[in-house]
Picture 1 (cartoon, rainbow, N blue to C red):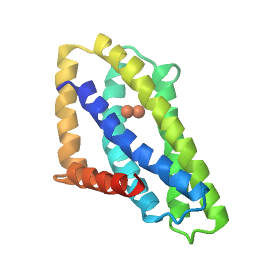
Picture 2 (picture 1 turned 135 degrees about the vertical axis):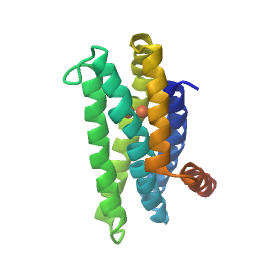
Picture 3 (picture 1 turned 120 degrees about the horizontal axis):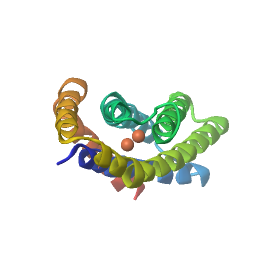
Length: 181
Ligand SMILES: [Fe+2]
Ligand SMILES: [Fe+2]
């Protein structure tokens, strides 16, 4: 598996959690009783799996190597991707703060708004990476770059994520997929 294939596979996992959050926001908007743990679990997943692990591989390794091969990180695709990661972090923080409170109507409204904004932002972000940025990476990176990235990704898996963490998140996603239908 190449480094960008690995990242693309992670996108498919992230999209499943985005779908869960979207449906939970639908439920809140319809005035249904929604277990707020869904948002707490989603925030935990987005902070660890999506941000620390996946965005870590992109920001600390892939994007850095693309910059070394001549791409700017101040303008153009890399700058946009980095700005979107930051924008996403702000939404996740807001969802987390609100999910930690009593679910008043104001809190619910904030959760729905930030959830919708985050899902839309990240879905479009993923599409851009899958279709534009990763193919671009594969054109400009050398074979040695690809090998270095593979090793670097393995290191992030071992040191940042640790054993069993992917499996834990897959279980959590499956559980919420069953509950939100
Ligand atoms: Fe990204
Ligand atoms: Fe990504």
